[in-house]
Length: 155
Ligand SMILES: [Zn+2]
Image (cartoon, rainbow, N blue to C red; front, side, top):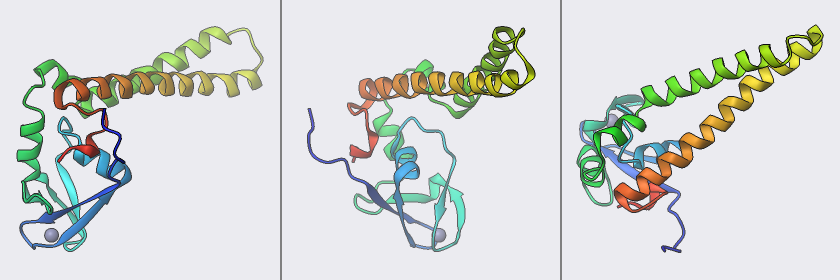
């Protein structure tokens, strides 16, 4: 087990302008994830998004696409598909539809006020529940593939 604190930020450099950008919180988690298929990232010097292939980590000098390839080498194609944005958004959209449909069935005989409150609520709960399952499964896949559940620890 690694008990050292999880890094909360990392800086990357845009090769086109040599400008440095610090990434934190959600964007750091997303960019540090070697199974992420996010195609673009922000450059605070250009003040615009650029393709991830134009960026490298400032501390190691490694290109982010090389970093992704190196740390995701052990991932199966199924694991890559599972961690892709299309599957995530698709699954969450299905969870919302499923939850709302479930709400319609469960509260079919209730008054309109209860329907108005409970049908969005069951849809919302379904998304939260399935989202938690997705996050947990992804962390388990990441742990198997690159040795860390939290990829912010990767160098
Ligand atoms: Zn730039």
